[in-house]
Image 1 (cartoon, rainbow, N blue to C red):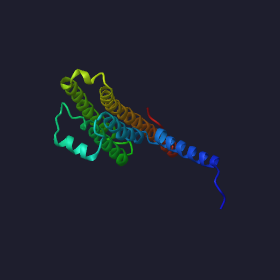
Image 2: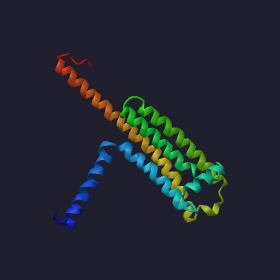
Image 3: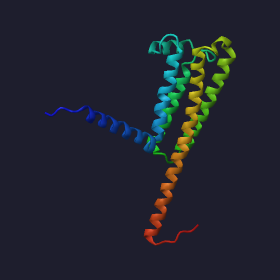
Length: 183
């Protein structure tokens, strides 16, 4: 058995990373946004929370839930939104009701996070806004809102791509059957 050189390992790792990036950026942008939506709000909440984010912490926060104080629901809303959009995308492959369901779920979650932000900063004391935790909480809210908008943009672009494919298929089908295109 021949030994593998470090250069060969580096080339293999580079190839795997570039193929994964190509898959996520070109072929499946909804999957990329969903992965970001799963990871980013949870990581920001974990960094902002005093005890590290754990299952016990999440359940205790949900048990003592107060809309204007508890922040654990923001990542849960993001995860639920991404899961719903990913399920709809995988069932209809970007066609049919994908854009409508993505728009509706994102607008609902956008409104929820917006109301949550207003309620949180209406109750939160002013000393939290300048601290590290305050900046992380602001980033949590902003990332959730930005990822909701990213889901809408990706759903719209996916829908447009599917319509272009359908139009090209119609043109090819009509040209092969010999029927005239009517504008």
